[in-house]
Amino acid sequence: PLVGARAPATGLAYDALMLKHGCACGAHAPTHPEHGGRLQSVWARLCETGLAARTERTRARKATLEELQAVHSEAHVAAWAGRAGAGAAAGKAGAEGRAVRLVRLACGGLGVDADTAFSDAHTPPAARLAAGALLDLAVRTARGELRNGFAIVRPPGHHAEPNQAMGFCFFNNVAIAARILHTRLGLQRILIVDWDVHHGNGTQQIFYEDPHVLYISLHRHDDGNFFPGTGAATECGAGAGLGYTVNIAWPGHPPLADAEYLAAFRSIVMPIAKEYDPEIVLVSCGFDAAGGHPAPMGGYNVSAACFAHMTRDLMTLANGKVVLSLEGGYDLAAMCDCAQECVRALLGDRPAAPPLAELARVPAPHAQRALRAAAAAQAPHWPQVKRSVALASASALEAGAARPGCLQSER
Ligand SMILES: O=C(c1ccc(C(O)(O)C(F)(F)F)s1)N1CCn2c(-c3ccccc3)cnc2C1
Ligand SMILES: [Zn+2]
Ligand SMILES: [Zn+2]
Image 1 (cartoon, rainbow, N blue to C red):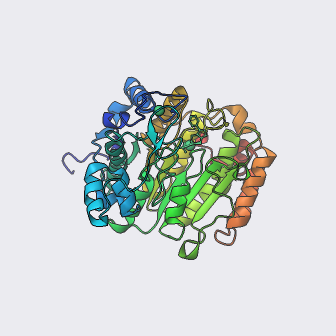
Image 2 (cartoon, rainbow, N blue to C red):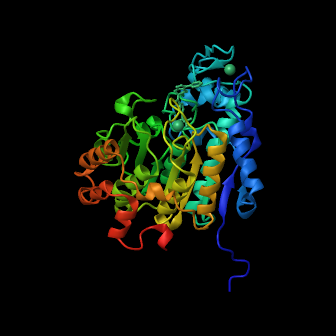
Image 3 (cartoon, rainbow, N blue to C red):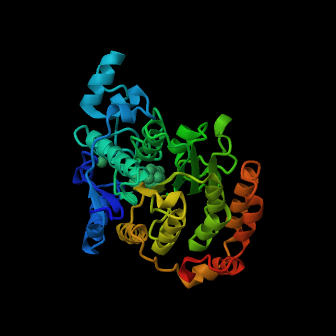
């Protein structure tokens, strides 16, 4: 036998230097909901439960300027990658220092916009570490050196556009990893699933014309009245990328929960993902769809068990090569519960079943309408959704009954 050959482990990326990014004013929630305590709490929970000890802790490293420029402009990297970045790119551009203006925030700190605080000393290293930590997990998982992984990182990334920081985001962590898996490892089919309650406008924009990356997002859209307002079902990609953007744009009311998210997975997400047959799955793993997040930062009630079920569903793809990367999530207890259950799923533990009431509940009519709208928009590109969308009008139990043995809990 291969001496010392061990089954590849679940990688866990975390670095305390990412805690230091924040506003000079030093406030946490509610002034600054995206604060270092979010990571601290999740890491503590993974340590207290012994889950961190069952994983392979990977060192976070700063993404290089070249890696950041895989999806971001030189000016953007120069602006947000710190002195090193500013020096290099500014030298080329000739412009002195930061190419973008910071605004004074009501709290007295400085930021890109009213929401996105910036600390000269701590934001660039944290943002580069977040991108680098995920990149290493993704590359090592793609190579089979790791079974799967979870990047416990901040600042988040999915709102960051090629030349625009916004929505707490500076570098698009998941987009950088996906682009580099394609350009450096030659992967041809990379799936990004974004279940953060907010649409990943940056990720969508970056891959809108790229067939090598299929972007599937489930988000509260509210007809465009929920931050950031993008992500309508009719946004399906363009050019060579037509059909490689899938938006499940939820209504604002009623509060959605497991019944709707499980229905989305069995009726739209998994049928398309199986057809695409990705070589790796990256997840923009925000937990702000969980209970405990009142609007405007959520308003839904998805359970920790449901996030674990969605993780397990995705593990049936790409030989189980799934890497979660933290995006949003602000209620500390909810974040810890969700992160814990997702890590347990990645480790191969059987996840707890979602609440029976949710398994038995038929998805809300407004949500069924959203799923039918997504199926209608995608039918030209993914014909099988014309049939699978029928599963959206049944409860998980009824749908499972239709296809025996499909519910995780029956396996
Ligand atoms: O909803 C957002 C989000 C920005 C980033 C969000 C995210 O998608 O959860 C990410 F990127 F962090 F993962 S969600 N914004 C920015 C903050 N915000 C707020 C704030 C609420 C409290 C304090 C400061 C801002 C109200 N509405 C918004 C719009
Ligand atoms: Zn502040
Ligand atoms: Zn969010």
